[in-house]
Image 1: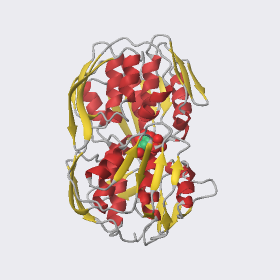
Image 2: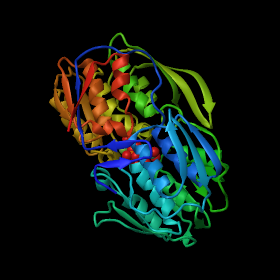
Image 3: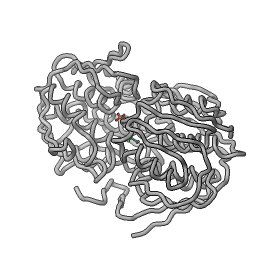
Image 4: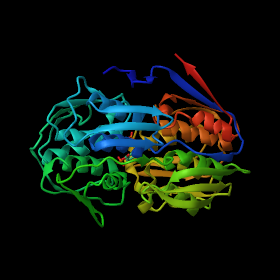
Length: 454
Ligand code: SPQ
């Protein structure tokens, strides 16, 4: 499709404007909020709802660019989807074999999840497809999915560097299950292979080196599709169909994380974050902050549509530096940019290791955060697989998010403890996961203004 804009039936998302955030120093976070729906679950609700027999209703869907890119891709493959209106969608499922050849390339914007999961799903279809993305997505590694898929018999061409565009020749009826031990802990690789396994002969079994988010497995089970979980192995076959189900997407703990850190570092803060997904494969942020001395209460725990949900009450508490336990890394993988800000405010030294995956996200999150923290006067030393941060005052200055939504929001939160204004360039991609960030952060007490330049 086209380079800097994409279209859904109700929304035109224009990515040609440059957005700058400016944060005034100080403040505290107070009140009650419900952050938007979980991004990972929103993607999967569209994918599985489309493949189901019958009509799926989704509530709490994340109306942000990444999830909307997945939605548009399924519309392009002939699925009728009504909405989103206030986070509600109606998906008229076409069944496991009902997708149609898209007329154009499927443009997936900034979304790694869309591209990697779709590559598995489309490998076994009866039609060809091409997956493209923006500059950041076109630089992210895809061999992690195309290599195991090739072992299953898939035909996917990448660039020489192993990146998108992905040219997929559909091999309906010709994929074979594999027994794959993942070299990295990646929910996207696992989910990609499970989706391909739904179209493969025999059993597809994926073993993970450490637990990663399991929303695909839980949602497949919710749609009555058989998936077998034994310890760190999950397996699937083509024997099954999906039955439409209603999905209630909880708030995204990765979006809540900005406020969990913000309230923990800003004296006087007291915040209640409602209806947050607390799937144990996602709660590393709570565990790490608590090890640092944060005061976070998990209240009103309940299960909603097969996923654990709770309200999170966070009150300011002085933090101390820690060595972050490596087993928590995959459980907090998207939260490290904002955890680095917490570390700058935590007495002593904080050390992260075992997190080399951060280098291949929407940006190199180790380098970009270290650069920005150093500009703000923080002693942050990047390492191959993590960072060493000493506590110290946060100054003002101008930092660049490199088009990475989580970097932009993390430096905004740093403003709560800065002693001068922070300007953050390149913030347009906050719209990929949290378009309401500025409004919500402002309502809760952050002094943030947003400037758009054509
Ligand atoms: O979708 P994308 O761009 O890869 O999004 C990120 C994010 O920060 O929003 C990663 F940059 O989240 C990934 C996450 O890091 C979403 C995800 C999923 O929904 O399965 C899994 C994680 O990626 P991975 O590579 O560890 O499997």
